[in-house]
Every structure is written in C-alpha cells, then in structure tokens.
Image (tube, rainbow, N blue to C red):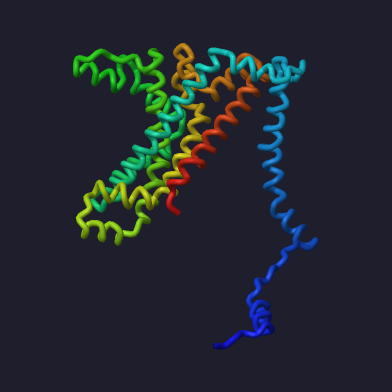
Amino acid sequence: MLKTTTPEIEEIKTKTKKKHYSFSLNAKDKYYALLFLGPSLLILSVFVFYPMLKTLYISMFLTNTLGKTTVFNGFNNYTQLLSSPEYITSMISTLIYVLSVTVLTVSIGLLLANLASQKLAGIGVFRTLYSITMGVSVSVAAIFWLFIFNPSTGFFAIISNYLHLPVMNWLTDPKMAMWAVIITTVWMNLGFTFLILLGSISSVPTTLYEAASVEGASNRRQFFKITIPMISPTLFFVSTITLIDSFKSFGLIDLITKGGPTNSTNMLVYRIYKDAFYSGNYGQASSEAIILTIIIAFFTFLQFKFLEKRVNY
C-alpha cells in the first residue's frame, strides 16, 4: 500500500489552495466612477432624496396655506390621521381598489396573452386590439368611460333599457363608483400587462408543449404546469409593478369621480392632493404621503417575501 508523504500533501494543498484577489480602485478609477454616476446621483438627489426628506420634515410641523412650517407638531399629524374614521375609510377603499385592480389586471392580461399566443389566422388583429390602450392618454380614457357610464346615453344604459333592466348609477352610487374606477383602471393597464406577458409566453420553448401533447396532457394542464411556471418571473414582475402603480392612481379618479360620491373613491393619493392643494394643510398631506410610502413598501415586501418563493428562475 502506497503512503503519501507529508511533503507531498503540503505540495498538493499549496497547489489547490484558492487564491484570493483583492479589488481596489485607484484615484483615477474613482474619478471616472464619480464622473459617470454624478449626473444620476444629482438628478436623484434633487428630484427624489431631497423631496422625501423635505416631506418627512414638513410632516412634523403645522403649516400655513403657503406650505411654510409654523409650529413643531411631532407625531401628532400621524396620530390624528390614524385615529380619523375618514382616513381609515380612505385606506380601506384604497386597499380594495389596489387588490381588485392588481388581481383583475394580471388575470385578464394573462388570459388574453395566452389566447393571443395561439397561431391562428388573424390573431395579429386581436394582439393590436388588446394592446391599443397603451396609446390612450388618461384624459381621453376618462372621457371615453364617462360616456359609457352615462345613465342616459351610455353603453350600459342602452343595454339595460334594451333588456328592460334597471339602469345602474355608476357614478352616483358609492359602491358602483368604486367599480367604475376599477374597471377603467384595469382597462388602462391591460395593454402593458398584455404585451409583457405575451412576450414571456412566446419565449417558452415549444418542445415542452410538444412533449406534453405526446404524453396526452390537456391544454388546461399545459397552461398550469408549463406556461405558468415558465413565465413566473414575468408574472411576479407584472404583479409588483401593477400593485405599486395602483397605489399611485390619480388621473382617472380625478377626472371621473373626484373622490366621490361621499368619499367612496377618495383614495390615499387623491386625499393627499386635496389636503395639500385644496385645504392648504401641507403638514397633514406630508404625513399622509409618508404613511402611503410605508404601506407601499410593506406590500412590496410581502410580495417579495411570499410570492418570490414561487418564482422559477
């Protein structure tokens, strides 16, 4: 039996020992790094970091109608908001709106993208129709849907009269107004969601579907066992972006309902706008902005904590 001597073992250890490389920037490299990063850091500092710090600062004060701080108020603005029934109602309405918009947008967008990925005659026309909302501005979309929701001459009113059904007051009934805003927002977001998901589904290897067909898997099973897992990173991305954008929805609410009726669609973002520019209460509006930022960060954290585990990279 051969025995390895101690010097041989030491030689093998020396040869196989991992080398550690140290990385350091010299003065010239640091200069170039700052040169390239400088413009971005400057823009972020002026338009992101400074407004955030300024908002946090103002939220600790009472202000006059011009937004100038007057009296230090500490956390009283926050405690007053969180104990206000109106603010809690706005928060609940916002959560209902955000969750509904996110689920409906991603679900319908996924369904349409899966249908549009089929190789059928004239499918390009449907792809164009599904994605056309990306070229529609918020103001045009609001005018379009205001005509549809009109209780006298709107599309839904005509259908209801034709079927001899009671006409729904979409914009005057609090519950229906919420659904009117949700439907409009989902319609606006579908174009982007559809295109992103269609591109992801188109990149799934066709060999997987061919192998599944040979095994006798139905289209429904292929959709849940192949399509969903393969595009899960894109689904995670789309759901996160849609959730964050829904929290920041403003234009459609301002043009369609203006937060009414009876504050049923007075979402947190629209409430910030009204408190700041209508009431001149900039301290309270700044506190609302900070709370909204925390809420968005919390829900984003939950998505990364629980949904990312189901993503297959």
